[in-house]
Every structure is written in C-alpha cells, then in structure tokens.
Amino acid sequence: MKKVIIIGGGLGGLSAAIRLQSHGFQVTILEKEASLGGKLQRHLGGGYSFDLGPSTITMKTYFEEVFTSCQRRMEDYVTFYPISPLTKNVFADGHTVEFTSHIEQMEAQIAAFSPEDATQYRAFLRESKTFFQLAENHFLNRLLLTWKDKVDLRLMRALLAVKPFTSVHQLLRRYFRHPHTLAMFGRYATYIGSSPYEAPAIFNMMAYLEGEKGIYGIKGGTYRLVEAFETLAKELGVQIHLNEPVQRVLVKNRRIQGVETNQHIYEADQVIAGADALTVYRELIDEKDRPSVSDQKLSHIEPSLSGFVLLLGVPKVYDQLSHHNVFFPDNYEQEFKDIFQKKQLPQDPTLYICNSGFSEPELSGGTGKSNLFVLANAPYVTKTQKWDMLKETYPQLIKAKLKEKGLFGIDQLVEYEAVQTPLDLQQKTGAYHGAIYGMSSNSFKQAFFRINNQSKDIEGLWFVGGTSHPGGGTPMVTKSGQLVAEAIMKQHE
Image 1: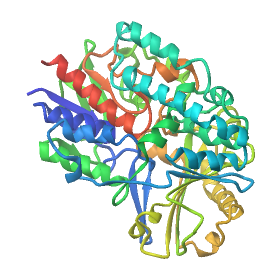
Image 2: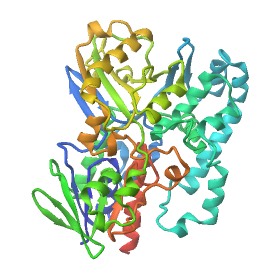
Image 3: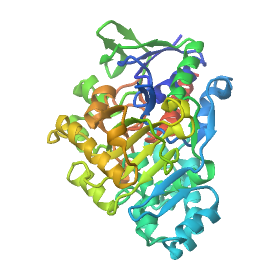
Image 4: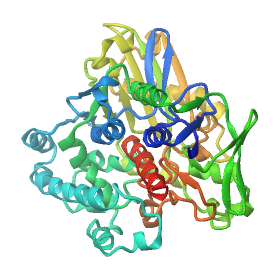
C-alpha cells in the first residue's frame, strides 16, 4: 500500500487525504496545532461562537465533490443553507446596496446613487459570467504541472480572453464611474488577498459567481465543514496526528523519503504539503534540495494581504446588520496604498463584519445577542511593525469606526473580546509573513503562474493550498486537494 504523508490538516490537505485514502492509499495527516482546519478555526468565548478564517462560502459543488469522490452524500455530514441578502454593502455617505441575485433590485439600488452605473450592470454581469466560464473550463479544474500544460493552445486563448494585463479596477472603469460601484465590485480582489488596482481583471468573475451561484452559511458555523471532512477522513481510515509539527522534509537523491517530527520519522512514497508552500520551502526543506526555489527567489515573491481580526460578543442585536456586511471608507484606494506600499494598517479601513447570529442565534449565545467577527484588511508581517502595541491600539480605532457606522454601545456593552493580528496568524498557522492567501495576485505571474503543485526539484513532493494552483479561497484550496490527489492516483495506475 502506497504511503502518503500530508503536512497540515487544512481543507486542502483533508480534501486530498479523503480522495487518496478512499482509493487505496494509506494517508497520515500531521498537524502542528491541537485541531484541524488550518486558518479555518472555531473560537469560543463568553458563550459566543466565532469562526476564524473564511466565512463567505461559495461554490458549494467544490465541497460536495469531496464526498461524492468516495460515494458519500455531503448532506449526511454537513448542512449548507443559502444566505440572503448575499452581502450588505454600506458606504460612507450612508447609501446601501444589499447584493442580491435579482438584477432589477440591484439596478434600482445602484441607481439611487448612480443612474448611469445602473444601466451598465447587466453588461458587466455578462462579462463577469464569461470570465467565470473561461476560468472553470480552462484554469480551475486542471493542474498546470509542465510547460506543455501551460502553453496548451486552448489555455493560451482563454488566458488572452480574460484580459490578463487589465486590472480589476481598469475593467470596472469600462462599465462604472461612481466610487461606490467601483469599491463594491473591486472588493473581490481582496478575496484572493490582492489589490483591485493591481490584480488581473479575471477576478471580476466573483460578481457573477456570488450573484448567480449564491453565498452559503453552514449550520453550526463554517468550522462544521472541517469537522465533516475530519469525520469522513477517519471513517475511511486516515491517520491523524495532532500537536505534531513537521520539523524537516526528508530528501535523498532528489527523491522524497518522508518527514521528521520531534516524535517520529515517517517514511512515505509521496508527501503533500498542505501548509503554506512558501513556509514549507523556506523552513522544512534544505536550500540545496530545491535549486529552482532558492531563498533569493522566495524573497522576491510578494505575500498577499493579511487581516486584523476583532471578535466582539455583545448583548445587543444591531438591526442594521445582516449576516455578511461591508462598511466602505471614503477613499478606498488609499487603503491599498497603506497595505501594499507603506506596509501599515489603514487608518480608515474597510470593515467586514460576519454576524452569523443573524442566521443562527444560537451561535451568538441566544436571542438578543451578537457575535461579531470584524475584519480589517492588513499588511503582511514585516520587521518594522510593532504588533504587540497595535494589538492594544488598533481595536480602539476599529470600535470608533463601528460607532461612526451606527453600531453604538459596543465599547460599553461588550461581554467578550479577542484579537488576532497577522503575526498571530503567522505563528498559529505557519502562514508566510502572516499572509492569508500565501502570495498576492498583484501581478500577471503571481496570479496565473503560482507555485507548482508538483515540486520540480523533489520527486514525490506536492503542494495544495492558496499559494499553489488554482489559488486562494476556501473552494479553490479544497479543489487543489482533489486535483493533486487525482494526479498522484494517475501516476500510480
């Protein structure tokens, strides 16, 4: 029986483990933390439940195929439910757009501040749909392991069709003029940890993806998805070791041998790194064993943005909040200059609030309470930032901004409060520079040619997760696990 070791029990690693174990491989997951999930964790405190990490769930079919790949029904393990409105967007002047799949309603809401932009909404959605179809047909459902894969004529045609050298913002400007519309749809670049003023236009596909295919909640919180994958993996026979960090990937004659932890040496025919690929290369593999990915080359990769998270348990319901909420600042572009150029926290940040108690009051400890996951986009970790100090001061700025948005009384009423900085994320998950999505997509190369899922230097070493193809975001990470598992299975046929 072929042995596979998976480093890290995030969604990508779990996805690959399930697929391989169900097809005759012996899979062992080594997780350095006390629980699986990687960046997706559950945080409990004061009777409130919060999901750390991704909370906007799209592309449900990508999760479903993990179960169907081993003849299981997803509904027997986890329950998805549609969220409406999809996202409530609130702008600095008080205008609000509740994102919905109903095109007429969207046009009416946009027309309230820009009748001109409203007339262009349908045309924008058509191009957004085209981008998504091209991405799904040519990029998302295949690995790009060799140069032959990458220069495939159909792929090249699709790549040109998605306007690879046009930014998200530049494409939006072809349809819209008002700052509200530009910010609302430009925000999708942050779904892959990037700036709308730099990331390629293909990420405008998210407007169609969310509007047409919907946003979902998961009964019991999004961490239930991790628990569902874990349950299925154990049923199939996957061995899971918690609190056992991998210290070194073992290589001999450019061939994988296994991995070493402080408890054991595990031999393996294949090793899949579910942990951040950039961290794995730099910290677990000797540079002599990875000539094509040297430390010098790694230093030229721009990490994605990170996030500053404030968890607030408040014995009050805020009627102006839906499940997903975004409060935009006056100057959206300045936020990305602060993050990517100045490497500092924005002083007037966009604030995303997940208020899952809106859909499931039990998550907030019962009726009359709110469990607010508040996220501000943040720079990746550098040596100049003083996160210990910012951990004390920046929450006060966030709470002041929430008060400006009409969420009164939080500072006086809050029963539970916790903070997670980019440095915390780096230390807990091994995220490279605390970046949520590994590398940014702020350039053509980093967006379309990410770290190869199969190591060029070490036979038998693979990568899944946001830093590798097909990219960041919960569905993409899950898909990467399926694609890598399929490639390994094909090699062993």
